[in-house]
Structure formats: C-alpha cells, structure tokens
Length: 156
Image 1 (cartoon, rainbow, N blue to C red):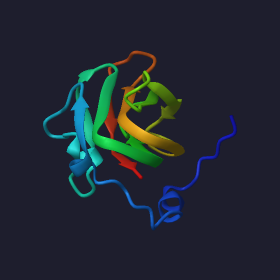
Image 2 (image 1 turned 90 degrees about the horizontal axis):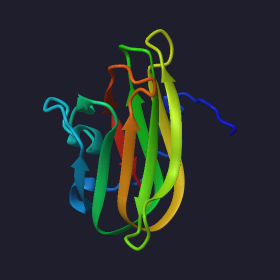
Image 3 (image 1 turned 90 degrees about the vertical axis):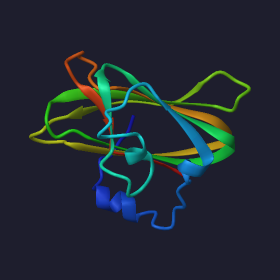
C-alpha cells in the first residue's frame, strides 16, 4: 500500500468547505465502555471536550446507528497517544441494513511519545445508504495495558 503522512494542518485546510454531519441529530451511539470524564460526545461533537476514552482495557466498539440511511463520502478519524508506545489497530465497518457488516478499512498505527503521537486518517468513501457505522479499536495489538481512545470522528 502506498501511503504518505502529511501535516495535520494541511489535511484540515485542504477541505475547509466540508459539511460534517450533525451526529447528535442523526444517530444513536453505542459504546462498549466509557470513562465518565471523557464521554463519547467529546469525540463526535465539535467543541464538546477532549475526546473519548475507554474505561476498560482491550478492544472497544463505537457504533453509530442512523435514524435514516445516510450517504457518506468522507470519514475522518483522529487518534492521539502521548504517554505510551503502542501499536493500535482499528477497523471501520458499515451496513445498509440489508447486508452484514462490510469492512471499509483495517489499519495499524505505531504511537511513540518520542516521535509520533497523533494519527489523523481521512477516508474517502462512496456509501449510499448507511444505517450503521462501526469503529472497532484495539488499542495495543501486543496486549499491553492500553486504553482505547479517540480524539475526533467526523463524517460527511
């Protein structure tokens, strides 16, 4: 796979006119665990805090269930880790209600406090009638004591 890591400022400014979906009005969110100081709203709604954190170790699920099918063209995920070195894997899956969950992407990222502490991924998609979007985060594939976290998730 060919890949480039680019500056986060470039990514955000390259699509200044993007209309992010108002998830608060369009979906119900299910989450496998949640630190009460870092609720899921902090990652899904702009200006609501400093991201989501799990309250339990291990893989975690964030699932958006849309009230009405949504067309998705863009998925932006932002993860940060400033304390421990770890290799995270995440999987994005979707459903249109008629088929089983279909994988969009499975990706790993290495975090290191002395080097890479932030990952922002922009996924351009063409999904016509999404009824469910699921993010599965394995915070450390080496099974050390790491908690899953998500700084931001935006959909357009």
